Image 1 (cartoon, rainbow, N blue to C red):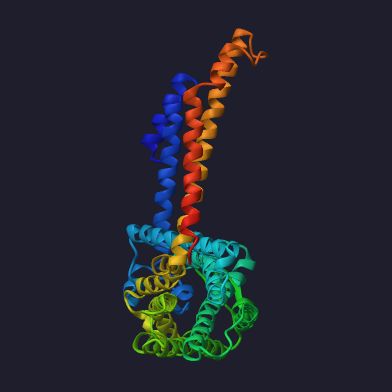
Image 2 (tube, one colour):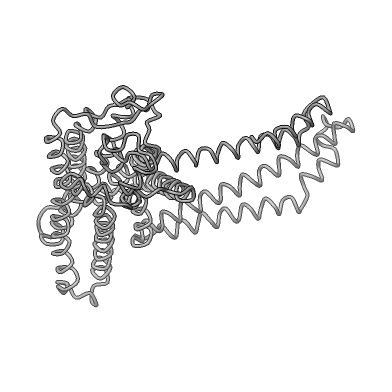
Length: 453
């Protein structure tokens, strides 16, 4: 706090002998203001230091980097408004990812009619995306932004491991769903995948993802730069991969990128290309004009395929920039010497993380069943809120009458004319009747909406 403003608060306290509420509020507001500004200035300065955690920038070349060295290496310095912008963008994605995917999981697990083979894969995808929103997005963004690790050592191993697992679960789930759709459309006479088989595949996906991601959990350590490099007056902790053989680690990352991204999406894109040709270009075997149920089935099948194709396309688009950067980072590390590489990393990473919040929106746009379920949940919450509001107002009205009767000494007599008039008041009964009718109408509306699939 500046001396001038701090002195004004002290003088006001001395003159009155105590702090007035206005002075206390002013002091607190100034303290919060300067704290926020200091935090943003710190973030803006730290973001221009080593990008080793965020972008793989060589640590030895970035220690003690002053302004002249920063200009020599060509790193863009993030302004305060840019730091605020990225904080807001990552925060919105994390909240939408957790809330939207939690809603999808709740709908599928609580509605028996929604528990289909395709939806088993969808709920598995939602679990992976929700974990990304809870752990991968906030912790990874904090590490890249401040270039420090403020959390327990265990989280340094957990966060990279969870991020890798969630990505593997997402892409392998999309692959399993594509294979299921491929079999159902191309070989309709074969036995369909059962829910038991879908559960077994989901368990296998998680097992393979956990095993394949173990190196990220085993070899990430909290590292104190002050123990190795001079120029640090205090401990400077970072979460870094500490693998003995760097060539092996580089090969593992390239292998993981190929297995996690390029190979599965090659299979998925090929499967959905064949499905699209089959569904949209091949005429149905049954005359849809003479069989309305077949027409509805064909239309529903096309909508499901369209929704899944869009999910895969969005996933490919969101993750392609980051995966491309990660490959370049391993094969050509000099890419990190580009002036705007820190902004490029944040753009690529945010786009990849945003995929975790987009799938629930896609389901609501392209799937009628999810539309109805979203509407059902909304109406239930709205009616519950309105009902609680009516109950609260009625309780307050009853408490008011009881208080008045206590003052008049008639609270024990429930048959007094005042109480009888209250209980038999037409307006009061009409109020209950109108709300009962509204709730009944909402219930009938929901039932009619969900009566047909």
